[in-house]
Image (cartoon, rainbow, N blue to C red; front, side, top):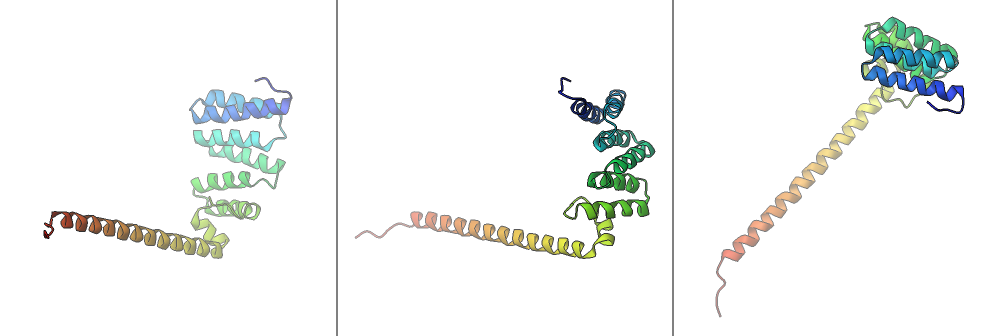
Amino acid sequence: LDCANQEDMAENYSIRGRSKAMLGDFTGAFADCDKAIAMNPKSPFNYLNRADAYRVQGKSAQALQDCAQAIKIQPDLPVAYQMTAVLYDEQGMHKEALANYQSYYKLAPQAQDIPEEYLQEIDPAAVQKIHEAKAKREAAEKAAQEEKEKAEKKAQQEKETEKAQQKVPQPSQ
């Protein structure tokens, strides 16, 4: 890792650590994430990458601790609340998940990865808009499919008519 400064180097370790976790190399993942945090303890992303490695390994308590540290460092970071909400949801802790999804939604109102059961509690109007948009999209897709089938049927009929006309003997003059 040849980087110009320590923050860049820490970021590289952090990203590499998360990648190692995704590949199942948890020993390497935690070594890299710990090194990243030691090099730059002020980066919330270093904690979030280690939290993700903990999550993949099924260590929710440690993952939640790292998410809390990321939020402490940067309280306006939407992804920290999103990851925290997912962790709580996976543990069946609805109230805690909802609180974090609410924070996430306040910071990222265009987020599309909030489960509908939570979004319904946070912003029922948004859920209604999603359903309306989905219904409109499905109706448009159905109309397009019907139009395509109609055009294909017409083309097939024209082809059959043309074949039939070619088989009919023409009267001679």
